[in-house]
Length: 352
Image (cartoon, rainbow, N blue to C red; front, side):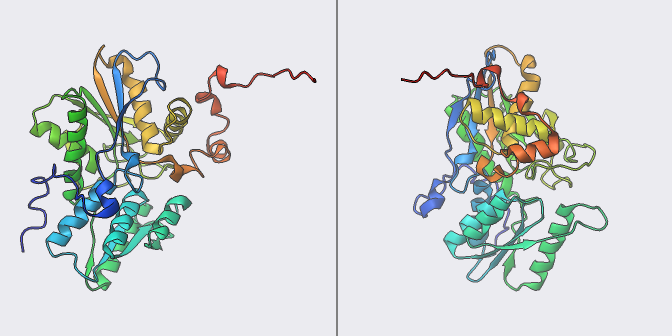
């Protein structure tokens, strides 16, 4: 059998299959210019709408890439049980692929996984395995989830763990993501802002840029409380952004600079996008937008900047887009995304 990872980057620009139903719709997502959310910018700002992949996030790409190559390598065959740890997006992407290929899928989640994500997983037919308590040594749910995955795989004959945290087909899928952005902009991408979690997206984009000798400056956008770029571990409320454990896919040189943003930054960015650009996006999208705002004065006139919006906002209706939830955790902060013109004026009504 050939090495499963031997072609992780060799065929990364090959288009997804066109004869596999909904999976054919993965990739080739729109790149749109943002003109309202950060007014009076001296540079052009574009957003890669990865949230328009069929299951709703950029994780459709690595999910399909990993499954297809494991099938080709004989690691997934009839009756194979797929087992993965995910706070939502990768799990949903895998659930979609497994539903299409007729594979049983067990997704290990924790209490921070949103109710919407759990319902989406179940809608695709996935079995949800909830880890109710964090790891006793680290106090982290991620460690506990990974331990649970290993346990299930060890006990389950004919099982396969995609292992999104170390599988090279994860970043390999995003060579094409970067290729699409570069092609759409005629080769001019001066700055790239990318949120981090497994590091699959940012590593894949960085590898493509280096391979093609591009001088694009890459900003990693990490969460305050994440340890990926050496930050101090702390409680985080927004799932899917940052990590309590540095992923094996992490590389020191995959970004020129790291910008850390808070949970409130994510919320503010998301609310601004919804109100000013009519884009309902997830927490990581709000994070990258606020990262751009933080360094906008350092970016030269006429530059081309690209941000990646990883997932849809519908998955955060009970959190980011819930006024009640936001107020419970952060107090009265709606003024951060509401301009004075949005406050309704009294309208005089004359009886006829």
